[in-house]
Each structure stands twice: as structure tokens, then as C-alpha cells.
Image 1 (cartoon, rainbow, N blue to C red):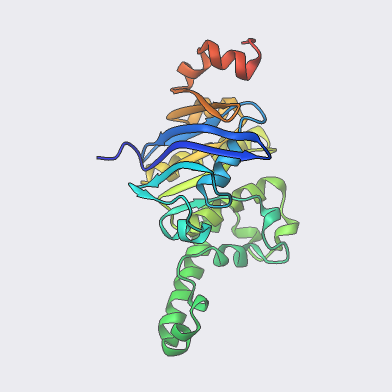
Image 2 (tube, helix red, strand yellow):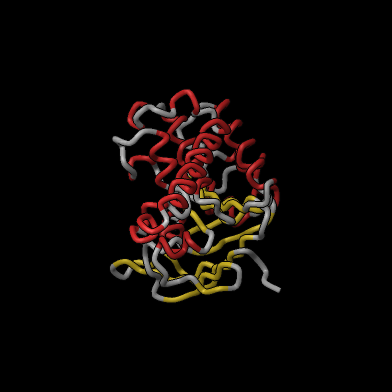
Length: 255
């Protein structure tokens, strides 16, 4: 039996002799929200880049449901059920909210031209199903009223919701979310927290990087603390908060 949905073991990655990841190891249990926290420069974003296939560590292992995925391309990892959110700025700013959501749907009929030609009716049915899914996701995220708007016209909070929506369109088992509540007002941060709990209640799993400690305390089941490219501590929020090593590394000894 596997310890987690995703298991990260001994990841090492250096840039120009500087260790960005220095033997990071932890597991993400299924059906839970695992939070990855740590001071700036701890290696959290580098870790996300490594497990999602954007950069290749020099050594280590990343297993998804027991299968090694290290070395696979990002799209191959997505096809296996792990999706990472990106800031909307990385996307296609001229597209509408609806087009953005459609773009991230699984099994796009336009992806395979032979299938599209030979099975036009099936392709139309799939496109219709994707359109219905996109509308449902937009409604759930309270984006239905801006579904035809260009992404550039969205507020910061709406862009954050769209990031989550794009990840949901891929129907993942594991969602990697990079600061899903960064820069939003406290009310929306609370709504995003409720949304993430609801997503997990449906059977999905979330690994998130977040600096909002109040949000982490409220929604996370398990917390992994990174510092200087290593796993420093893990446990419940209360356990890591009260850990002296974490206080030194993360808070400079302050509480």
C-alpha cells in the first residue's frame, strides 16, 4: 500500500552550484489539503516546477499513485491526473473566460485532427460536453456574469478563481495550487478556502503553496515546512507552529 497519492523522495536540484532543492521528501495523502509553507527562498516554487515536469532534478523520485513521473513532460503528468495552476498572466490574455476554460478541458476534440475528421459527430458531442462543463465551472466560481469577458478585464480576485477553474476543467485527482488566495481581499480569501474544502470533499486532493497563515490554519489537513531547499518539519498546523526549528527558520524566533 502506498503512503500517499504523491510521494516526493530525496529531490535534489542545483542551479550554478547553488542547491535549490536539497533532498526534499514528503507525501501527499489522498482526499486532503496539504499546505507547503516556508520563508522566501525555501524552494517551494522550485519544488512545484520539479514535480510538475517544468524542471528536471538531478536526483530523487516523484511517484504519483505509485508510478514514477519524474522525467515526464508536463502534459504527460497532466494526463495522469495531476494539474498545476499558473498565474493567468502565463496564459492567453486575449481569450475570454469561456475560451480559457474550454482550452483546459480534457480530450479536446480539436487535438486530434483525424478523430475530428472521422468522428465529426463524436467531436461535436465532446465539444458540447466541454462547453457545459465550462459553464458549470464558471457558475460554481461566480464567474458566469463575466464568462464572455476577456481575461485582461477581470479583477485580481476573479483571475485567482479562474486559475482554480482551469485546473478543475482538467478533472484532476491532484491539484497543485500556487498561492490561490494571494492579493485578494479577506472575504474572497475565505470564499476560496471554502471552495478548496468543497473540492476536496468531492474526492480530489490539493497541494498548495500559500503565505496566508490564517487560511492555512483554517483549511489545511497537513502542513509541510520547507527551509533552504529541505523539508524542515511536517504535521498539523498547530504542531508546525509550535516547532522551535520552524519558528527559527520561518519567523526568526518570533511568535
